Amino acid sequence: MRILLFNTMFEKIKKNLFGFFLLMILLLFYSAKIFAQPSFHFNSRNSYIELYRDEAIKQMIVHGIPASITLAQGILESNDGNSPLAKFANNHFGIKCHADWDGSTYIYDDDLKGECFRRYNDVLESYEDHSVFIKSRRWYSELFSLPKNNYKAWAYGLKKAGYATEPRYAEKLIDIIEKNELFKYDKLDCMPGLKPVITPYLTQNIYYTPNQRTIIFNNGLKCIELVDDENFEWIAQDLKIPIHKLLKYNDYLKDTILSKGVLVYLEPKKHYNNEEFYFAKDGDTMHSIAQKYGIKLDKLCYLNDMAISQTPNPGQRIYLAYKKN
Image (cartoon, rainbow, N blue to C red):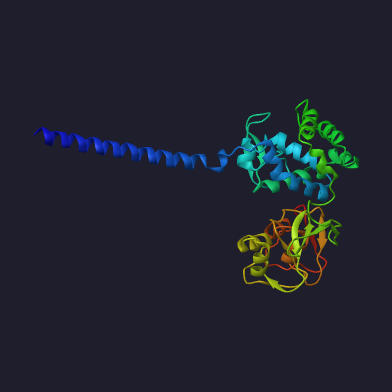
């Protein structure tokens, strides 16, 4: 009887221990998954600079804003990419919606409760919009007469023009630049490790990749100009970019054969171009114009109240930046 009672108690203890260990394993598994989520990743100052310095240099080459200023603003405005606005809206520069913004939005408490901020598809889109935002506002125009290596004048100029309400905004930017030696990036006139060549597209720079593809910046976007007839499978394999992304970036179908001279974008096209309009020529399509000016096809059609399948008439004014009245 005693042996039977002992065995029964032993079996219960074994079951309880097994259940306890199973529970602990499950808790450890789910804890690991939770803490592995990207939203909990914390950027250091150094990692932020490593991640976005090349994009800041590119913006300087294309738009003329010192790389040190762009990086310092990104660091300060986004808390090294750790702020809620950066994490959930990819907004690294604190740019609010304003009347001319028709993209996605994110509501966030800043100077006032429930303010409207711009939401971007990715961080690089935020960097590009930051440059365009500064270039397109007349009250920042005087900054572009300053030398690009005079980061102090740029910092005080941004504060004077009203970029931020923080009284010591300029001093904070300068402190970030000097402590992290960001000023060294202002001395570059091409992307690190790449050879600059003059391009026919907007007199910007082009660069050779290791596999001899030539990357061009058109409308501030990376693209290639085909030197022969090709298809997207060859290009995707050569550049190690997923084919579905290339097709989406360029508004093409998979089986499309591309002809010599066509531009193929390696990143998402924009909603606008710095040019205000273009006069269509014989043989133009809405798609060919969208490729020429680096604009999303659906956005170009929206700006001009046209369907994607419509063909513009020769001489027709096609709006590239503002919606047709």
